[in-house]
Image (tube, rainbow, N blue to C red; front, side, top):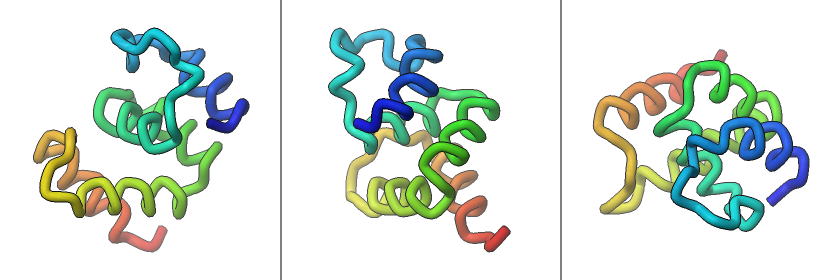
Amino acid sequence: MDIELYNQIVKGSPHLWWWVRERKNLSTESVVEGVLSNGDMDDVLRLLQILGREKVREVFLKQVSRPRHNYRPQTANFFRKLFAQNV
């Protein structure tokens, strides 16, 4: 994981990964999933600023294309619509 991503997202919001002992070992995919699933809008905006909209979109779409994923239906629907817009 990128050290900037860890310092600005994971370290600042440990409650999003309360069950993970070694948060420094989280993958970028796990951070994206944790923020989009459980973070607030400030967390999401910070994630988009650090990783970029395209990277977050790419990770999210890859995750939800699998038969099983950890997003609630409402969350998946919201971010599908958000990432479908070109803004």
